[in-house]
Image 1: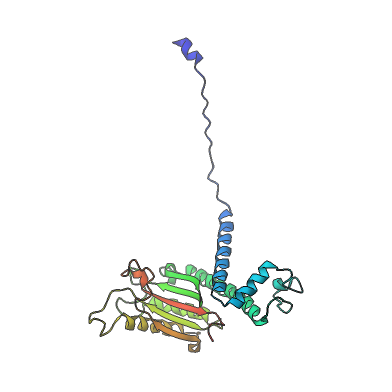
Image 2: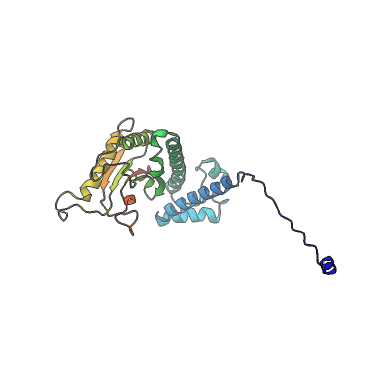
Length: 261
């Protein structure tokens, strides 16, 4: 038995110990790439919504970017006076202005979210704010929660924190020249009366107008308001769950300047 043990191979186990080092800044690079990709996607979606003339102009630039400009670097400097290869100079200017405006609106949205996240007053509400781009412009969506944080249930009466939140948003929007569209949305829970009395259409419109009054409480001018609409449950955020509270929301759309004329 002793001889058998002596002939057994010696097994050495090596255990790699990893320290609890931080992840460094790699996530910031990934996040920056994601934001850049999303910005590119928004621009592509906008271009697809334009007429054929504009799409041809953009395609011509990317096929031959050097020949597109007499000055070579005019695209980078923002000087469009030397651009050639398009039949309509105003079409190219519109494209460049739209890209620049998207950047300005995106920065405003980031600044707003940053301010809300740092303010204890809006601690419970900041997670309910969704900001993205739609065809008409930048959309700031205030989505309700199961706790009815924004409106008293079944009414158009804003809670006190919601009023303060909308006033804060209005102060940020007042710094922009853009027109504003306000939309009210409800879930699909019906009122009694088979649609002949007070319905979700009235409720959504009343809530949109309540939001309008809160937005213009301080520095935002009423002349900036372009439209106020009540859509009831016709544009559900979650169509598969029509009674869900996330369908109850206010959408504030900051229209692109060339869309708000």
